[in-house]
Each structure stands twice: as C-alpha cells, then as structure tokens.
Image (cartoon, rainbow, N blue to C red):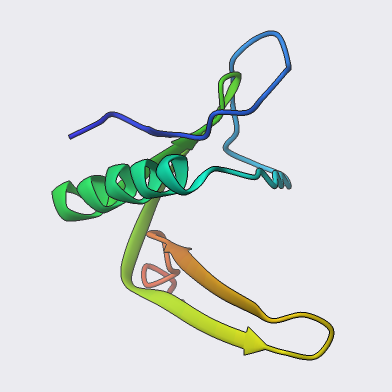
Length: 100
C-alpha cells in the first residue's frame, strides 16, 4: 500500500497541501503510468476511506464517504472518446446538522 497516489508531472517548486478552495490539474500519462496510478488508487480505496492524490509538488488528502460515484460517458461526435470519472464526496456530509 502507498501513502499517496502520485501523478508524474508537476513543475512547481515547493510541496503544498491543498485542503480548501479550487484546484484542477490535467495530466497526460502513458498506458503504464495510468495503470500504476489506478493500482495505487485501488490500494488506497481498499485500505481506508482517505485518499491522497499528489503531483511532485502538491498533494490533496481527502477523507470520503461511500458510495463513490462512478460515471461512464462515451461520445463519438467529433472523435470517439470514453470518459471514466470517479467522484468522492466529503466524509462530513452534514449528518450532524440539527434544528434547535
């Protein structure tokens, strides 16, 4: 099991942990890099309800709740494309909300 799932790409200088705001990164991986990334992610999912996704200079630790939403989308309009998206919801789902 790995501590975090790392994408091999970033060019920034210092490591920053992202826990708030908005962050988006798109990377292009080889077939082997993609398989390694997915295996590391699967190991984390089997082990616990926290995943940490990282680049070389950033990391996002995220505690999630089940179920994980998996969306599969296929299109053949301009070019054939298959998209597989995983969506993890925050573990603090508001269940501790009360009316007094």
